[in-house]
Image 1 (cartoon, rainbow, N blue to C red):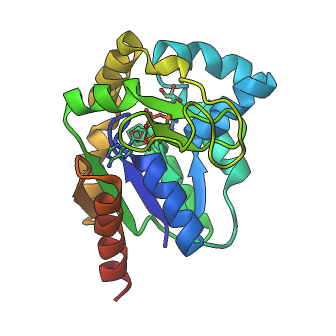
Image 2 (image 1 turned 180 degrees about the vertical axis):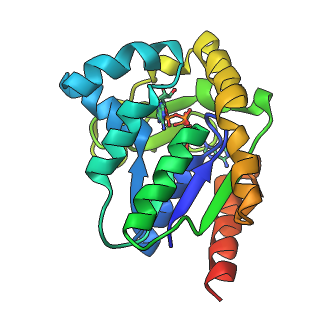
Image 3 (image 1 turned 180 degrees about the horizontal axis):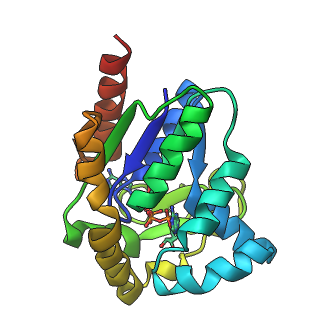
Length: 214
Ligand code: AP5
């Protein structure tokens, strides 16, 4: 199945997508992770994307769609995490999948109130080497500020500053939330309560996927 993970910044899309891909073998495509990697390596895409990301704005659709065209696998179920983020991106994804005889099977909306978003993102720590994600309170590493998986020193994402988070929330409301109606109109939108603890949200996700399979 092909799954779209939709929701405000910090809703837990990446956390759930990583676990699902480890346990069920889905291919996890996170446009945020791909872009951050491109910025780190100083590629032409990274140089163009950085200024938008630092301001909390969306990277232009044409760059994102070209990026997804490049990395879209021919085989296997995919979790699209953080993509699409605009209606034109969603339409482009539908066309890309259709050419491969596939479609988006489910769009999962991770629903979370704004004040919880700020609490989640201000406490988030990420590993710059392996991409693992932690939270100082809700999902702390065993050793303070050190990645459990690879031992690297954890960092705080530049766009997790409160002023940038507020801008990302505004952008989400204006440009991404219309996708809720887009997928509802196709009859494939499922809303999850993302304010629950990580394990409970994971159970909700699994239940929805299992129900769709049956
Ligand atoms: P991106 O990286 O996609 O950011 P985002 O959508 O804002 O999502 P986040 O990664 O911030 O949050 P998440 O929902 O994955 O939450 P997480 O699991 O980390 O995009 C960054 C930027 O790239 C954009 O602003 C834009 O500029 C650009 N971009 C990316 N895609 C684009 C596109 N398609 N088009 C244009 N531009 C694009 O969890 C957050 C924290 O909460 C963590 O600390 C975690 O441990 C904790 N946590 C998770 N779940 C729970 C829980 N249930 N309970 C308690 N804590 C939890």
